[in-house]
Image (tube, rainbow, N blue to C red):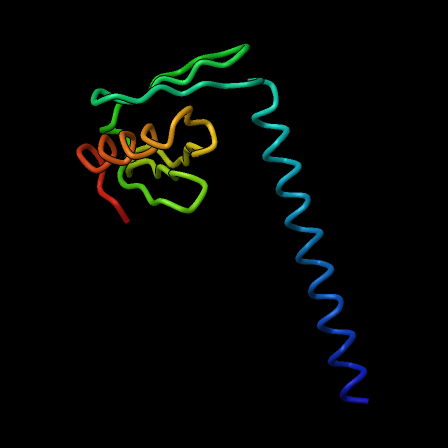
Length: 112
């Protein structure tokens, strides 16, 4: 009886977690989909993102810290603005561009 209960509990928990993640991904996609394809350019002043339907700029003072994953740079906003910006490495035209962005971020933002 205990084994059956454990198997059912684990199964329901896994199913609910996957369903929740899928719902969250769908909601996030629906929020960014209207912007269309975007291009981000970063320099020592900040980052400018231009999309098909909108554009915005972000000064480095807004970004509190960043972390790097194998495929992304994740920028975390400061205390006054809660937000996250993702810069995918696959968007770089050259591997040296990723290194240049890392240098810019290290110079202007604290690394986690």
